[in-house]
Amino acid sequence: MAMGRLAHDKVAVVCGTILFVMVALALLAPVISNAFGLYHKIGPGQAALTDLLEFDGLPRVGPPLHPFTWDHPLGIEPGTGLDNLSLLLYGLRTSLFIAVLATVISTIVGVTFGLIAGYATGAVDAVMSFVIDFLLSFPFILGALALAPIITTRFGANSSTLGRAEFLTLVGVLVLFGWMGLARLIRGQVFSLREREFVLAARVIGVPTRQILFKELLPNLVAPIVVAISLALPGFVAAEAGLSFLGIGLSEGTSLGKTINAADGYYDKYPLYLWVPVGTIMVLVIALNLLGDSVRDAFDPKTRR
Image (cartoon, rainbow, N blue to C red; front, side, top):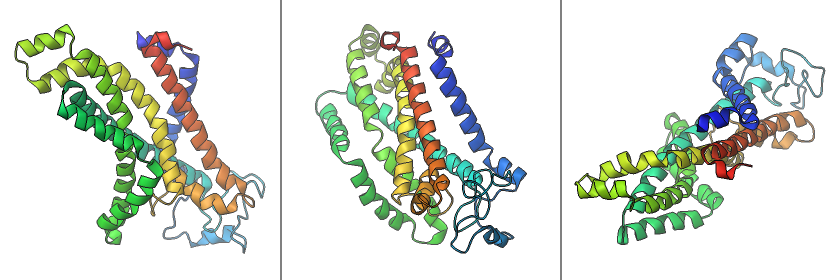
């Protein structure tokens, strides 16, 4: 029923198509780059890339400073000569992977925490609710700036583990500050369901608490969880880009936020380098948000626009 309403929603269809294309391009980034001979990182045999640059590091080929060329349709990166299209595809791939992973983990944590807090009573519920409220009141940017260097330094003691430490730190910071809203939502839903007849009957016949939580209550929470996931994903995409722009990201590889950080110094001389990743993030986040609104409307027709 909900899927049928979603399929007839023009906004959902358009946004879903946009997201499908972007995800497909991100997944096929290595194939596209290899097929067209595009480079997204410095490697053996690529020293000649510097021949594509002027003495001041600006590109000699590609838009917007020079005529369009299919060899570099979005131009090349100042200072390195790497292809902007390849950087965009690999950056989109990294950003989406981090955002999806953070969404999955935060959903698991939030749902589990919310189930326990909503079903429990007394001190357990009070303590868990306090933890949720405390973390919700903590400034996200301040916490990320404080925690990320500590975690990276602790677990990235050498170059071989630095990349993994940076990746886990970025995902960990997103999860740490991203699960509380869902936990509070699930707690409220469970609070209203725990006195329903099917839950009371399960208690009377001695069904274990874990089975009540995950086999009786959880199936009744699918709709709000799906809606929460669809609305949380664009937030994680934007948050990852923001943290990477602030330097809390991957030192190796590329992401949309890292590209924006690198392009910050060229916004006046080479604007395409900055606005392509910015525009990509805008389209991605808007499409995800509108799709999330459509998913919410499909599962709850009373809220339809």
